[in-house]
Length: 193
Image (cartoon, rainbow, N blue to C red; front, side, top):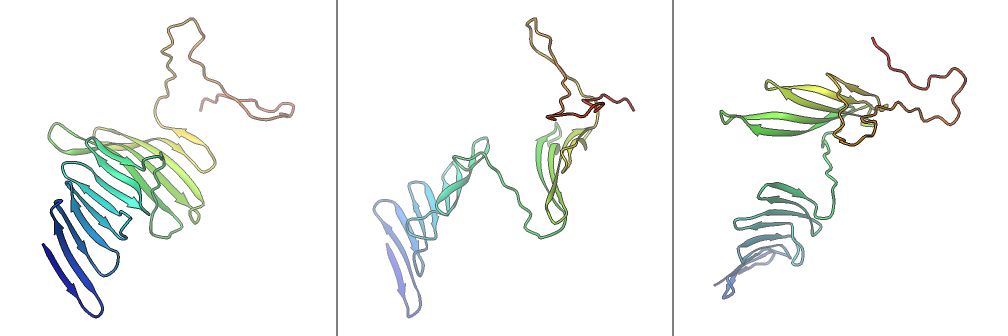
């Protein structure tokens, strides 16, 4: 099967051959190919942008390098990288983004159970991280780390050791990283307020 058109400013082709392959060409190197149970979208003849696999993955590419794919258990990001970048596309002095983990309750309703929140202020130059967990279907902030490194916990903090040996565990250490603390300098405190 060959269906073609050639005009003064564009061309289009629909080509099929005996190898169970179908190719749709536009004006230039762009094409859509279908063969072997996979649909490829190619902005250039030798470069993939997306692949859709029958009964399988959806793959997304950047400059012909796979960056994202679906799996039978969720998603996988960037074959050789553990980096996930989430960026707000709207310029502002303050912004935020979420990574939310959901489950489905006994009534079939989706529920947020854990959320990571990233906040920025001051033209985006300062960041804060918040960890929230759900209790009775309401997310509450349990840990906040601000732009100065101050960590604030909400709720109880348990230090638990599963060591069955005879070591003195668990340990809670307060450490001040100072090469020459001044006389009468605090080396660490536990304050009860």
